[in-house]
Image 1 (tube, rainbow, N blue to C red):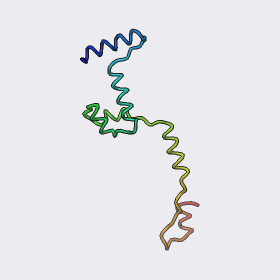
Image 2 (image 1 turned 30 degrees about the horizontal axis):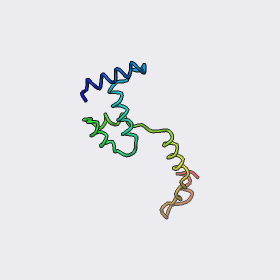
Image 3 (image 1 turned 90 degrees about the horizontal axis):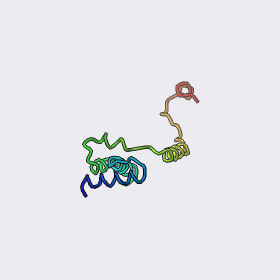
Image 4 (image 1 turned 180 degrees about the vertical axis):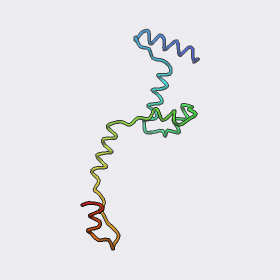
Length: 100
């Protein structure tokens, strides 16, 4: 299908739906879904989208609040490692420097 045929299809769809989508909107949506789908690396998305620079592809990467919340909850639920210091230091000196 030629570019102009697809453009005409988009025009007709926009007229019927009362929207103003463009072929670039579809490209942007596809790039966002590929970049955030978890199955392709950013470099693979870059190659598919034919971006010359990875910075262009990185615009489509987003951090989802749900994922960040889950990762933060996991981080804070992990027990802290026990603090240990080399022998030869006074407990009072360590307390003065690091608190406690």
